Image (tube, rainbow, N blue to C red; front, side):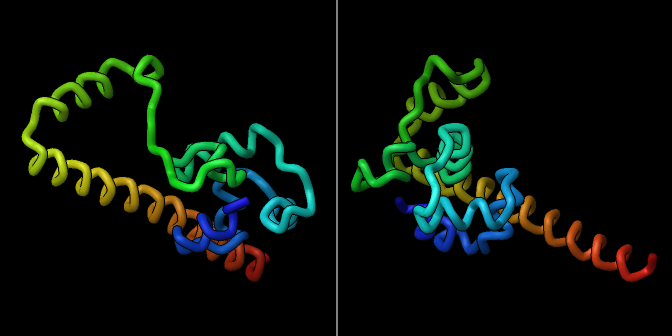
Length: 128
């Protein structure tokens, strides 16, 4: 599986990632080191988080596939895709880069929130 590679590429520790997907670090470590079978629900969360297919995570694909089933999108997303398709490639490329920036910021915000929560927990534990 490519769990470790994906996690490291995002700059996350096992603890940070496990909190983001609702696992203990110990359980996530077992999945990453292939010491336990991974639940399909966890695979779906990881697939969504990393924006890759489940097949990619379990090594059934050699390349990332960022394909989306259009029927699963809400109307706003469908409309946005239709507009992008009509744009010149140069502008669509810039929009894609901007979307990557927004996505990376959202991931960074989630990580920062978790770090601040951990800091708060440490402070409150010391005071009580």
